[in-house]
Length: 245
Image 1 (cartoon, rainbow, N blue to C red):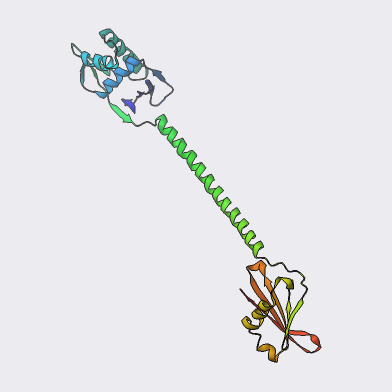
Image 2: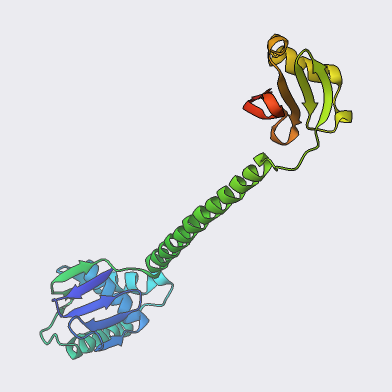
């Protein structure tokens, strides 16, 4: 806490410093006993305080030996300090045969402690770190998404390559070819996929098709069947494709 004496002098118990409110560079540091005495006077502003009370709370309570001489020296130090900083009227009044009274106005101001300053600086540091972390997190997410996207695209990409067809079967009017290495396939499996699942069994009885078969392992085991209706001059026309798992 900071204490303002008659709106002219500021007192900081923590630093034991007295300074002018308007010109803080005009300041002085009190001795330990004078600072303790001033704190007792401030806490009891306007009250008559006996010498015994001040000796106890300023010296005895701190494990020090009290004496009237120490009390008078501390009072003298305070009066000179207060006067040098601009308060000319007597604010520490002697009460004959009793003690002293602090006769002034005191305003109390909160002060920002070092702990509070450190906490504020720490909060600012955490805020900056938090912003950097958020930016880094979003950058990481974007990079991960791009990598994942291209890895999926590459996995799903069908590479076109030149294939050599192999005649597997002539069924009715249809010629069935394999686009893969025929050793990799079983003839019955091909015929079943083409004639039964793709429904070419009845079609081949009336129409002549050139049918091309392939297992597309590169796209999750799809079966691909392409069919072209034969025309005169062995020209392929009216082609279509079928794909299923």
